[in-house]
Amino acid sequence: MAAFVASAVSYISHLFDTPYDPVRVDMPMDPEEPCYSLSFSKDQVNEYREFFDKYGYVVVRDVLSSDQCLATIDDMWSYIETKGYNWVKRDEEIINPIRRDAPSTWDNGWPSGQAGGFAGNRPIFTKRAQENRQNPDVYNVFANLTGEKELMVNQDRYALFRPTTDQEGKMIHAEWASLPNVHLDMNPWVFTLPHGEGKELNLESLAYEESNDFFEENNHPGRYEDRKLHLQGLINLADNRNEDGGFIVVPGFHKIFLQWTEHTRSTLGKQYTNTMSFILLDEKDPVWSHAQRVTARAGSLVVWNQLVAHGSTPNYSSRPRYAQFVKYQKAVPLDTERGQHRKQAIAKQLEKFGINVTDLGSKLFSQTSW
Image (cartoon, rainbow, N blue to C red):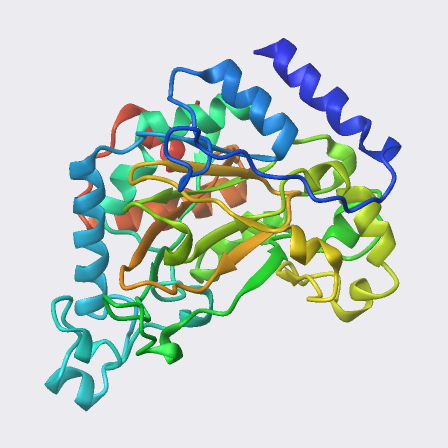
């Protein structure tokens, strides 16, 4: 494991040697089922590490069983039907609530975040969501890729892309389509500055009194000179084909990330303040045309390097797209003020939902130290 980490650090250190040249890197597809991106089993650790290093993302199959996927989809709909994302329910939403079996009700107070395909803009703390987060198969992929055992897991959202066509492919709900985008969940122009230059969010100030603090910790990975590998991920909960919409990635972008950052510092970089951490790439950027759909089976985990430009495309099918976002990163020490704030905030939710926390989960949820 130590050798792998050293290799990763050496790899990152050579990124400056690569000139900015946004050449398209084609994504390998499954030779037996070419409607899906190439994926790996949980046991193919060396193979999926090698693939990840080359392309900046990887798909690992069967981290969740079919039953676990269906249970999570059920939980997602229960969350939406009970307005778990909404503190205030309007009269019309109470009289005619959203029902999963009645698409005609899916306009009645649909959760905010539709543009990005999110099922609301607050973290999901439900029992099912937490069970997925403490799933050892999910954790192991992140641990194997980072070479880091002592991780914590984020508290993020579900994604539900409503279908926009009927069974014959006729568009019937164009207004339900999410917005196509390619973005970075970090500020690259601050990330590449030396420590001490450029104002940024102080993660040690997070009190986790606002749910947004859980998103802030995702999108502020420190500085490039720290030589840390930061990952993001999602779990597909249903078979996700190209027309269903969903995750896209620019394969190999991590290899030109530094050069792209310098290339755009005086243009796109001037449109964002130092504390902004959701960066939309200009549609005229040639990188946009290099983004490709990552299609995957139910129960598959998609992980990508946070330096890789990624995004999503709308659902143009009659099937919903279901996913859960996950991110594991270096654990915050519990003997710090931030660590205690995080521990207390998550503990309240674990108690509220009656979650049976495993030994692994206790560490991932910042309840006990590694």
